[in-house]
Each structure stands twice: as C-alpha cells, then as structure tokens.
Amino acid sequence: MLLGFSLFIILLLVAGMPVAFALSLSGVLGMFAFLGGVSAFPQIPVIAYKTLDDFVLTAVPLYILMSQILLKGRVGSELFELGSKWLGHLPGGLGVATVFACAIFAAISGSSVATAVTIGAMAIPEMLSRGLIPPSIPMILYGAITDESVGKLFLSGVVPGTLLTLLFIAYVIFMSGDMERQAPASWEERWAILRHAIWGLLLPIIVVGGIYTGAFTPTEAAAVGTVYSLVITFFVYRTVKLSDLPEILEDSVKTTSMIFAIMIGAMLFGFILTALQVPQALMAVVTESGMNRWLIFLGVNFVLLVLGCVLETVSIILITLPMLYPIMRHLGFDLIWFNVVLLINMELALISPPIGMNLFVIKGISPESKIQEIIRGSLPFALIMAAEIALLCFVPGLATWLPQVLK
Image (cartoon, rainbow, N blue to C red; front, side, top):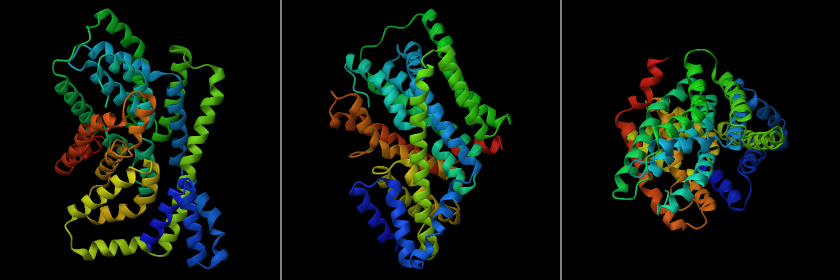
C-alpha cells in the first residue's frame, strides 16, 4: 500500500505537480477509495485545521520573516566581510571566511539555500578572481510532529554544527597549500568591521541564549529575533527601507503558505496511511525482521538521502517522520540525537550529485563555473558530512550532551 501511494506521488511530482498538491491528492483519493467515498470528505477541513492548530507553529512565519529581513538587509555581506578581515590572511583565507560566514548566517536565517545564495553571491567573485573554485525551521517542525522540546532540539545542533564548521575550515586550510594568501588586514580594519558586524553576530546569541536562560520560549524568541532584525537593518545598517517591507512581507507569506500547504498535504496523506494501518505494518516488519538496528538505521538514512536529492527538507520531514519516529523510538535510538542526524543528512543531500539543490543554486549565481566543477568541489564536503554522521553514531553525546546539561 505504501509503495503504491509512493509511486503515485512520484508520478505526480514528475508530471510537475507541486509537492503539497501531490500529497493532498493522494490523501483525498485514498479517502475516496478506502474510507467510504465522498462521505469521508468532511474530514478534510477538520484535518487541515488540526494540522495548523499548534502554538509551536506560530514560530514558523516569524522565523521566515526574520530570514527575509536578513536577506534584504544584506546582513550576510557584513558577516563575510568580518570573516575576510579576520581570517583572510590564513591559507585559503577566503574559503575559511566563507565557511565562517555561512555558519553564522545559516544559524540566524535557518535556510541552507538562502545561505548559499547570500554568501555565495559575495564569495564566488572574490574566489574566482584569485583562481579558486568554491565548493530551525526543520527543527520546529520536528518538535511539532514528535512533541520533543524545540529548545532541546535547537541546542542539540550547537556542538555538531560547530564541529562541522571546524572540519570544513580545516579541510580548506589543508587543501590551500601554497596558494597566494590575502594580505593581512590591519588591526584597525579588523576592529572596525567587528564593531559594525557585531549586531548580526549577536542575533543567534540573543535567540538561543534567551531560550536557555528562560527569558522567552522558542516561539517568543522568533518574535524577538524578528524585531531585532528589523531594528538593526533599519537603524544600524540602514539597508532596509519602508518601501522594502511589502516585498519582504509578500515573500514571507509565500514561503509560509508553501510550508503550511505541504503540512496539510502531508497530514492528509498521513491520515489515509494511518487509517489503513501502514505505520503499524511497518513497525511489525521492523519488529519481526530480527535485523540489527544499525542496518535498519543505515537503510533509513539511505532512503532519506535519496529523497533529499529530489524533495526539500520540509516535505521529507512531514512525509517520513510520523512513520520513522515510532520506529526509531522502538529501536532504542535517542530522538533528540536522531533529529541532528536527520538534518545533517538533509544538508548532505542538498550537495549530493547529480541533483542536489544547492549545486544548482551555486551554478545559478556563478554561471561561468561548470556544474562538473561545482560537483567535484562539493564532494569532499559531502564526505566530511557523511563522516560526521558516522561520528555521531559512535559518539551520540556530541548531540545529546548540551541539551542534558542545560535541561
């Protein structure tokens, strides 16, 4: 049954139907075929309402709005300039600065694709001129589906994210060899850009720090972060004007509507699967198979990686997590830990050839680069991410230690 529905959805997606409508249509047709025809249709608005009737989801449009403000306000350019002034003199300094800027901007925007566009648009011309080829909305949704603490989910990514950033930087330095280095910036220039960029650096500290000091909830943190973003882009950087607000709000509404439409579609699809007891059947298969739990874990990650090459992270989480969550819990895996593994896997999929989304984002903002070059450049970073997933399997405390200490 699951295979049949999956093939139907794949056919709809190949035909060009948006993910939300492909999921919804599958659910509606399943209701019609298996739950009494049109008499089951009154359930549709009830399911849609219950899907979005969750206070935690209030944070989603707020974080999206914050991300749009940061994009329009060109906060990423300040972070890249900061990294360039302080780290540019190191071997592979521009690459190191790019990794640093991506890590910080991704932490405050919550979007891998937005980070690739924002930082890439500034870093790629600089790298090419020197002969170089550049290689917590998902957490909120994870928390909403599984009832895990969003605060703990946020904190679980701090150590693995920092480690991944350091591994990327180490690789860039190692591979730079004898490449020409950028002239060191003066200390006056370094302190000047730090004073200017400190406002952007403070944002993740305010948002995450506020959550763990108890100053506000994760949802309130989204509101605080949005207001803070408006203040610094309006009055400090002066990169956003009143005339920009309609476009910012319109883009935020479009993105939020897309995410919520996918959520409703996924819940309609999940409703018919639950009614047909597909999750229970999957659980029975896992329970009775007698397979080693790590083999099942590897299989799950392979499927997620393949899905991540053709679907965006939000869709994958909403489609698969309701079925995967009870299986992972039954197998004895820590669900906070699994959240980190899942998201690293999704980021890995975004740079996995042949159709990783970020590969084509970089190609779009750097048309002079060949896609083959971009793929070759991304492979070492993909291997580093795969190695970190393996490391998390051997040392799960990398993800679980901080949430336990600050619980």
